[in-house]
Length: 109
Length: 113
Image (cartoon, rainbow over all chains, first blue to last red; front, side):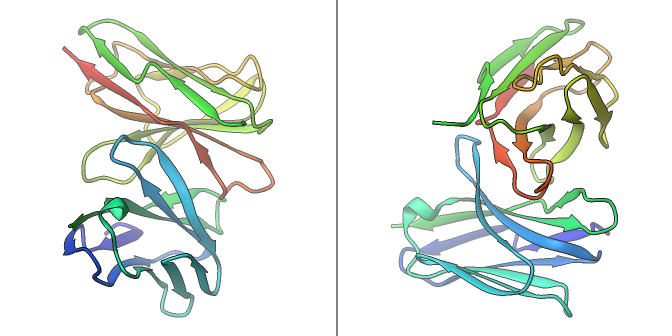
């Protein structure tokens, strides 16, 4: 079993829909990182969080440390949100990042 | 603007050849990393370096080599010993005090022909 599991693997939705991507992990962590990978391959950081909730524009990230689970939400989704969303956790045992396999999101106009 | 530059973006390699992927950063970061990405899998760490003239193997170092002669540069050589080199390669860097906060290059696609 992978230490970081993302669901769903693929998600197709219509423009305007509310999107939720989930990340579950099995190790102790210092923080969790949500990233976005463009179709061209480049990766940008969206959020880093160790508790509670963070919001930036239409993106919201939450984390529940007790349940070892995080969610990334996109409100009023738009075709330009189409990308792969990746969850990574910083393991507090060895200071390394453990990566999820990513969720490929397609938003149709 | 500061950032990470990877080159080339696309590279084709004949079987038995070594190829080198370039990674340069002007962020003044001490730590640099190379990751491999395959379809449907998470990023896997190949090598990382936290200081000039020092580097450590990651999870999948076999068939790869690196050097860190300058703080700004961390080239990756994919050797002929790497049995399945076709993949997307990403270079990243971070401040060693904040290893979770990575900056990434745009990546390099390597295809064996």
